Image (cartoon, rainbow over all chains, first blue to last red; front, side, top):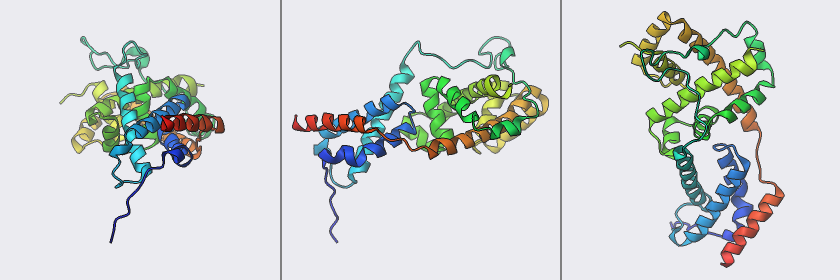
Length: 188
Length: 84
């Protein structure tokens, strides 16, 4: 049996793969313009690297592997960017009360209407806004792990972070989201 | 042995994905038994997970596509690059 060798046809890339790559990116990085840029970068990088294509993987798999690299690069960039909006602290980080709840961040009671308010469709709008308020690096990890429900291992591999790193980020994201939903949804 | 609220709620978050270890679960149970604040966090955390589940369905039901102009632009850029 002879193995079929895959070939590349870059003039068809946009028609054949742009939507797929776009969806792939959007499910991780929920930003239209940024996703567009990352895809363009991927195609350009693909053109440059055409000589290294061995034909073992399909064209799309090969392009995805380049896109994954672009996403890691993007994540590293925002991860190291200083002076960006940080996640709000929920616990004292030093002193006698280290690890205890900061007073104004202590969970408060949401009342009896909770079940009903979860059914309300508008909840998604408010939740999306709260997720959008997270620092980008937290939002990416949170979306991948919680909304797309990827395995921990997969997220760590795709973003090149450790599992303990992931849980710290998930913890910070979830405590901030809880507070945001308390203020903008459950308290009404 | 003694867990801070920060550590306890971190385990609680991990549990929402079914990924806390047995030992972590035991430590969390003891903490929640003694700490009302984290007990409330834990109950609300399950509600938040339900919200995220619902959100997942909405998000994944919405297929996103590049619009025509974006695609045409992208096509032009790629073709120009091919020509060199």
